[in-house]
Image 1 (cartoon, rainbow, N blue to C red):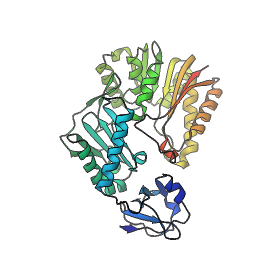
Image 2: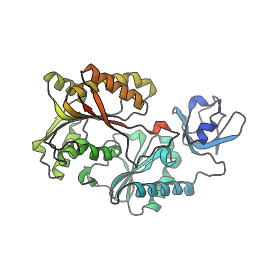
Image 3: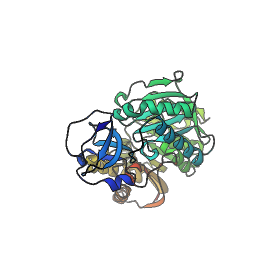
Image 4: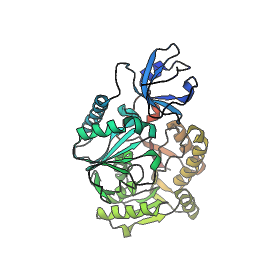
Length: 389
């Protein structure tokens, strides 16, 4: 086992409470160390604090796996944690859910490890190459033992945009059929964003759909039609899906058709959602429900001011597009943007557009995306549902 220099300040309380990250600046400077090594972290007096995965190239220098110096990082540990994660999903999700997050990284005590299930296929993703090196083989073995017979594919952090690696089983088909409630999705687990779907919005898709019966709906950053398809299936009068990626819109069309919803009765617009929202506002267009669910605008703390400016522009235009008494659904998936900052930006942007937001609901990710209380960074998704007047 590799040894790591001592911490320059006492973080033992935060780590003991469950915070799984130790940042680079917390350590006394020394050589970079080996990426993916399992290291022991000591306090200034040399006492053991934690054991975890070393990532010399990341601001998150160590991802903590245990605070028990007697606990080895081995197959038995990973088996226990995977089994616990699976048991939680069986407890909190409806039976028969076939598109879900099985392992949610830090919240399941496997920091940096994500595993999503799409029917008979498991998709593994790692937040860093160091995590894959340290835990990849152990995680695959644990999944094989817990869920024998399922296909496993792996999407590596350094290979974004490339075909994932087939780890176990036969190659996946072009699309895999899964369900969110009664709505069917045809998922491309090889080339789709994230692992194929934005599973963290599953419950919000269904909740918002109930507000869309008979409504005109604008779904900005629609991807493969998550909010828009649920709205159409729930009886929305007309849905406009907007996304910059033409392949995503083609997939959305296929998903509409797979649910016996005629895509020709709805609109699919290949455009930049930020610009199109501004254009629609200048044209005086309105909708009963507007959804704005953009990708992360703040990949780092340094990017937050710029991100809040972008959210302000987007949400001001989105609020202006909502008809009197209609619904705005606005989401932020950046952990660096706090809920307070997001809501404050939304309120200010709406006011500048001459609109008032009345909160109906504040939502987050579904129960298969749990959060450790002492790790607020894990509560990344914020979904505002508001009446606009």
